[in-house]
Amino acid sequence: MSISRGFVVMGAVYLVVGIVFGAYMGGSGDHTLAPVHAHINLLGFTLMTVFGIGYRVIPGLAEGTMPKVHFWLHQVGVLLLLLGLFLMMTGRVAEATIGPVFPVLEGAILLGAVLWLVNVIRHA
Image (tube, rainbow, N blue to C red):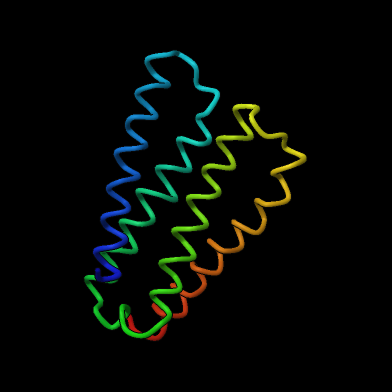
């Protein structure tokens, strides 16, 4: 699977998850998990779709190892961050327990974004 297709497909998955999550919150009237919903839509749907389109529009971006590292850092970082945020906000895991993991996951996402930046500077 190409990097572009991978990001666009995963963006579409997060779009559906975000819509279902938002519909559940709207139907239940409980908006406690709105931050999780926002992160699903922004880090999942929006960013992954932008990355996927970028890799498609500027083919040079997809060359080499850097795009693959970017893809996997973002996939793992976002999925685990969203799961952790969900578990913390629903009270299933204490903030003191999961809180120290968040900077590591955010760091993975940030590192992927830095790789994207370096790649864009080189090829765009």
